[in-house]
Length: 183
Ligand SMILES: Cc1cc2nc3c(=O)[nH]c(=O)nc-3n(C[C@H](O)[C@H](O)[C@H](O)COP(=O)(O)O)c2cc1C
Image (cartoon, rainbow, N blue to C red; front, side, top):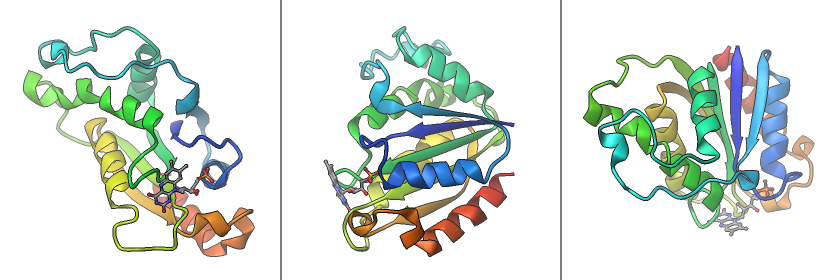
């Protein structure tokens, strides 16, 4: 079982990484975490090369990512909310998933979900109705274009008051339940 996790946060020792580590501790398999902040990836230029070719015209850090995503059985996105959405470096990577979205135009989209996916998010503010809406939608669609069926999400609100995941036992419980669905 190959597990590929995209870590989209700026703080390597923050709450999002704590959630991701806890999730990975509860999963068995070959695990790899991609730190989006450390990748050299150019923004999508909407050149539309992928409308007619099953690859991206830009040959940069994404070449490896495309291969890893294709090989993965499980894809996890873990990101804090930045201004309602996902942090910039992760958004740049997800925009480059356009090559897979364009399979609809090329006519080579696989019919079924072949992978499983999950989303972990943290937000500093106490919970409000649309706190996670935008970021969750972005990452859900990123899973979808790579044929990963989203098995669920764990959303930690009020995260700025949290110094240790042990302070949020309900979040730990939700992560264990979500990990079980990925197996
Ligand atoms: C640029 C920026 C924008 C943010 N925007 C939001 C926001 O829109 N909603 C929210 O609830 N928290 C927001 N936050 C707070 C972070 O989501 C919160 O601190 C999060 O838990 C950080 O994750 P980390 O501990 O993994 O670094 C923002 C933080 C930053 C740095």
